[in-house]
Image (tube, rainbow, N blue to C red; front, top):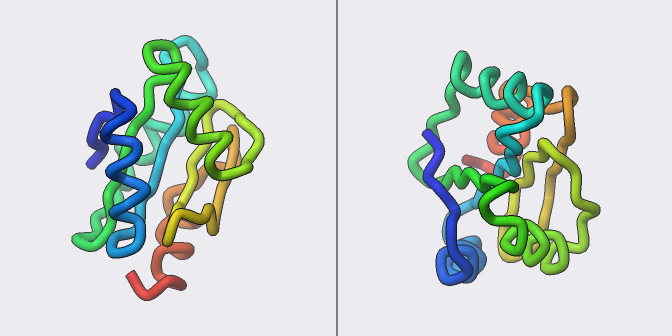
Length: 113
């Protein structure tokens, strides 16, 4: 389900693509047990949507990308964190144990996806 977000070019590309395809970012820390729990929820209840890109950002390996994402969207950094972006704007976000696949799916459905 998740594609790796691991360089600035891919981040910029995802923002450009957000005008045509919704982008879902999951900011994940491999050292955080809460982050592992949130990610495992998506593994148990994977989201599939042909018109949405699902991007996983490893915070330990790519801290600078996380900072770029935070600055670009104007959303306070949290970990773990899920962000839904359309037209370059964050229209939904959830943090920590508030991250629920059903809620992300509902937010995508509300957007017509």
